[in-house]
Image (tube, rainbow over all chains, first blue to last red; front, side, top):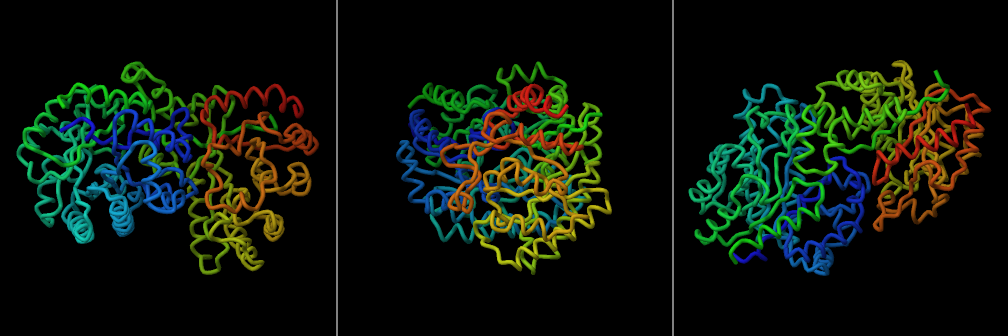
Length: 318
Length: 307
């Protein structure tokens, strides 16, 4: 695996949390200044976290959904041309989570909105010629439990609805060249090994997203997991962490921000406890040829994050 | 108690923590100023230190605030402990001009009023309907329909001790041709006006003339400056009017634009206006710096005119 095959997720930009200069991220110019810097950092491909929220309220400069792309670029071809000006050749994948829609006690609203916007996001991934569409199979466990305190009693019914939703997406994905993959997140209803039982109920074309930090926090060795499930892997997220969940943070409503003690759950690649070089080496040994995406969500300085990640990759054997 | 009390219209984006007890430890994880913008405890202390002892919350904050604090009452108590009170919440009356949306617009408005009551607030500054793009120009009947919704929500709010104040954006479907028509079509007993100084000026109203014409309707303010008065239709009616592609800012801190805010303060003194004045910093790259600059301008230029 050559180091220029690694993609960079646009989740390195802190889009949702307060900090000085955050507001710049809502304007188109910020992103168009960013793409050449991603290219200059040696990343030729990006991942887009699909976020419906930007299509409500005239903030279409944030390129995270189909509406925004069509508003600012008319179509995905023009957007990809804008990326190419910055030496970014492709959008390798699109991710989607449903936390935005877990905001009240109405599960019909949650599944209805999730199904609608996930379908839209999948179609957007196809328009972008992306390799994969990675969906989080549930909102944060704790966010669901906040609005549905009886979640444990209703897990069976909840799971049935998730299966139906993902099966519907799988049918749509099959008609495209986009692979549907399930994100494995430590804060999910389907955390850790639980993702496997869900995957077993889905069509064979649905694959796993391996996220090294999430697995580690959930108490699973990512190398062992990759080895055991290598034929089911649809994409890999190289993420890092030094977080130990010793206070059931995964059950809280905002699990990226542990309520009992402020800490960065994620570290930029190479700055935490995950042995990223060993994971990359293992992927090489196994002959894995699918997408590998770097995700840097720690520092609020995205340019530092880009170069930190590139510095790490430069030390890997090409 | 001063006649004018100052609040901050909340444009803080998601604040992930209530209070960081391990501040030094958290700081060292990244050695940047992330720690200084991550908890409500610190944010509210900034407000209190700079003399903004009210906060007007935004509806888009609720999805984060409620799981974090458990209830509106808990947030209000937490803020009060730090010297800040919740004065109210902004509300967008989506599609209120559509006759077939009347029940839903009223229901959403009433729900927002009830939320404000839980927070202990007494103002609901209300954008009368959505953006011009996609819905304008409105017919006379649609403007009247919008007024009917405002009256209905206003009547309900009044019963709960909440004042709704029309708050027009420069890009709203209610715009220069029908802005005054809407105000005059609403019942002054139930519907008031929140004067956003920059928004009305960008829309094309002369700030001081508008104040003089509607001084009896004004319940509160969103005080901010602009250097972009009287924008043309092509800007106001555009698809993405608020956040510009090139980073052009519509809104500036008081004193950094071209509005005659000193003239406004002379009129406030003339009227002996009493109440809350929310300062708004939408578009600022640094809300803490904006608060500090605003406090300096208030104390050295505007407040001396009135006080």
